[in-house]
Image (tube, helix red, strand yellow):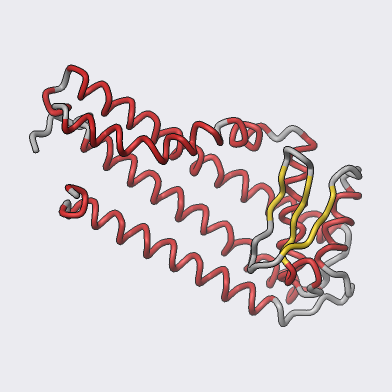
Length: 240
C-alpha cells in the first residue's frame, strides 16, 4: 500500500508504461507496414529461417508454428525455433526479418555467443529476484531498514541485490537482441533473400522497432532498481 502513495514510484510506473507502450506501437506499426512489402524471392518466414540456419551449418534446430501475434522465440534448451503464424507463413519483409532474427539466436547459441549464455544462466535468479526482491525491501523497511543496520537493513539489501539480478537480465538482453538482428540482416542480404532498398528498409524498421522494446524494458528495470535501492536506504538513511 505504501508504494501506491509514493509519487516517485508512480512517476516510475508512468514512465515505464509510456516507454513500453510507445515501443509496442512502433513494433506493430513497422510490422504491419513491412507486411505490405512482398519479397521478390517469394520465400515464407519458415523457409527463410531454414535457409539462414543452413547457411550457418545448423541442421539440428526444429522450426514450429504457433498462434498469436509476434510470439516468436528460440528455445536453446531443446533447439526449437517457434514462429507465429504471420511470420511462419508470411512472404513479406516483416516475416523474413523476424524469422531471420530468431534464427540469429540459434546462430548465437551454436557459435557460443557469451552474452546469450550469460542471459540463459541467470534466468532462474532473475525470475526469483523480480518477484521476491521488492517484497524483501518492503519487509526490511517494516523491520527498520532506515536504521542502517540490523535484520531489516540486511533484508532490504538482499532484496535490492535480488532485483538487481532481474535488472541485469534486462540489460544484457539488449546486446543479445541487437546482435541477433545484425546477424539476421547480414544473412538475409548475403543469401539474397531480400533485394532492393524497399525490402531492406522494411526489414531494418521491424528489427529496429523490436530492439527498442528491449531498451524500454531495460530502462524501466533500471529505474525500478534505483527506486528499491533508494527505499532500502542505500542512497542515505530514510525514515518513513
